[in-house]
Figure 1 (cartoon, rainbow, N blue to C red):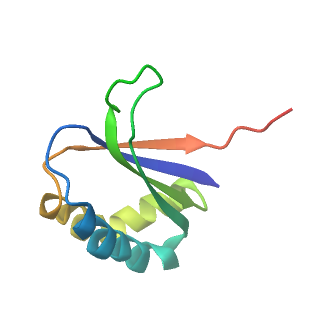
Figure 2: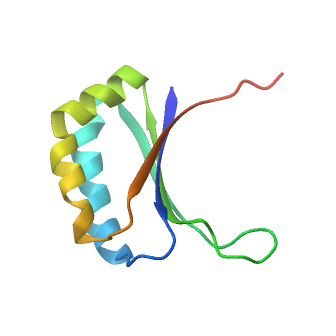
Length: 103
């Protein structure tokens, strides 16, 4: 299993209503059959010292494998990425993460 973090920087407009009611259902609909196991959305609240959060929103997508994520993007990435301007001008930063094993 891997975790794909899709992070949107703080500052530019972000339409959370559209994101939750249209974009994330689109992601789940297109990618669930291709290895997406879970999709969570978190909203940045701040830093420990009271500063602004560096990311206003993050989508945390759990996939079966890097290969499954790559196949999902190849199949439907163009449609999903083309939807981003409908809810924000913030560039999406994408990071692939492995789950760490605790000792």
